Image (cartoon, rainbow, N blue to C red; front, top):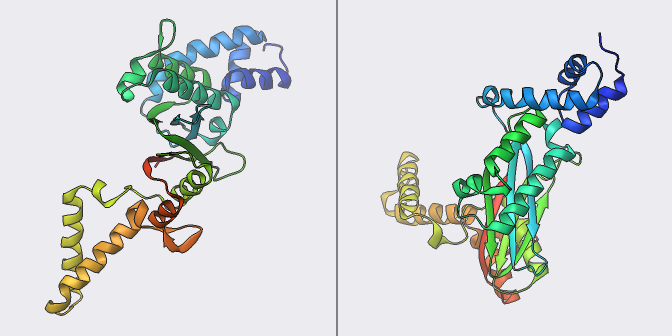
Length: 278
């Protein structure tokens, strides 16, 4: 049995993010040498990447990065298997590094991001695989948003005080207004609208809602003559639930989000909302 202490195990876990049993086994193999144990975990971790591919990653963190001039920003989700890894400094550092890389390179899409080089000779995919190996869990990068051109702001929400943000919102206004940007972003985080305006909803989605509303009304035995009004009412209810500017504003439900924007004299150009695992 190799000679090592609980402090050595703790140090190795802090260095690698690996599980306790994995650290003990690595220290055994390394005869108590922490540096050698780190190498062993990295090698074994790389071998285990393929084995972890079939496992699910539904924990993680959302991180954001806003440029100093507030004219651009990034929102990025990095997923892992457990909340233990999610709240670790090493995992969050990987997420922050990826967000910084997006801000610097402005990839067109996820495929371009994963193929780009985050370090000389190392792609983002390889960087994520390395984190997968080092942290001992399946690590997944599959969503990010990047805005540029207007006034960009982010709001990050923690669902638990001991976890990194699990919900992130990125908004872009046509002009600077930090207070409205924050209020709208907080509203989006809480209510999760799917669309900015009715124009953003695919026509087939609206038609399907009409069909469902009519079929439901008929099933309920509503009078034929009342059907058009009932259907319109239910479709409008769908809009108010899913369209941001039609929703009642979180801080004043007597006003719509559109009313708040109009009163401030600003236009919301776009938004992105990411909730870990959703």
